[in-house]
Length: 204
Ligand code: GDP
Image (cartoon, rainbow, N blue to C red):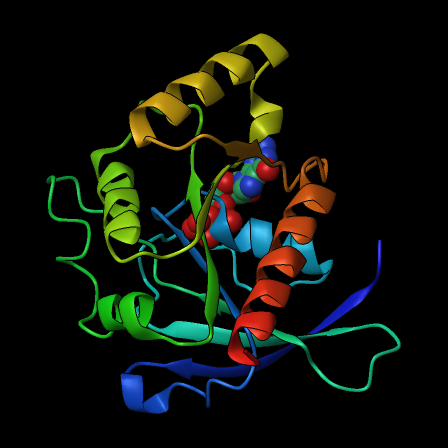
């Protein structure tokens, strides 16, 4: 696998602070504590996102630029979105999000793929289901990734993936383990494919 270097760009607390939409972006979404920071760190192979013991703190979109080893310029950006669903009360998925998150997902021209992280050990979450329904409604490309796959046996994982596909209305759920690196190459393939599609569409 090609080595990738990541550079932190900025934390946006407002749409006016977003970087210019000059590179394809991959958004990472999920409930707090789903393992989002661990996925980001394992993809890049260095600690870019903070794994935290106090979930639900981050209220900003954190942007990172990714450059492949041997290439002079960055080719891709990651957008680390705030975790949702930490509150115990069931609420609309976006109700607790800062107001600029929804417009980001709906309108950001550079957004090539939204990666929705879900925990295969937990029952299907209403907030995850609503997020995916919302992304479909907005016509956005998305991919569901089941985190912490190392914590389930092969059988348990297969059952959980089947349940998630049905409950979330998607044909594909990619298992991932930040701990073992399982699923990493496949997720990178999805990311580069989505990014190339976005570049091709932009130059049409
Ligand atoms: P975030 O709040 O979504 O960013 O979640 P974190 O990345 O901080 O992870 C939450 C907790 O799950 C931490 O205790 C991590 O060590 C643990 N965790 C994350 N990914 C994995 C994984 O792939 N396997 C295992 N076994 N634990 C994980």
